[in-house]
Length: 116
Image 1 (cartoon, rainbow, N blue to C red):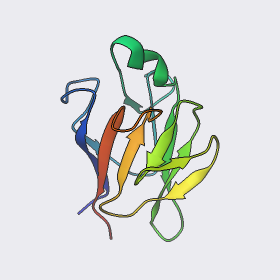
Image 2: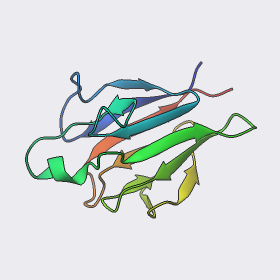
Image 3: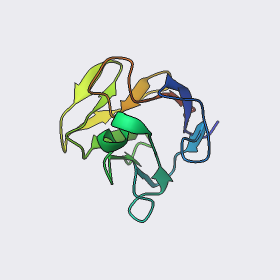
Image 4: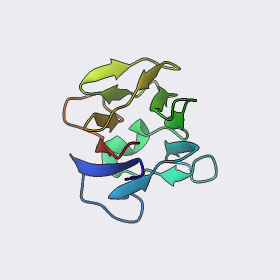
């Protein structure tokens, strides 16, 4: 099964600018600015400013394993462990990734699925 992210829960149900499933391949960039990112994550209200123009990227190394790189001071976490700005974290099937994760259970929560 190809690598992808599936929306778990968070700020709202899936819609066009909050995709329920995000295909991963090569390098996938996520953020609120569709001119800078391959996947747009939009939010309403106070959370809108927590999603950066280019919030994070997910890329694949030589081994084919995905890695998340956080580009935002507004936060990303993997399995409830914060990923620092311009730091990276390896991803595995079953991991929970949260974008705009300054508060517990807030932001966009996705489960990593797929694998070799």
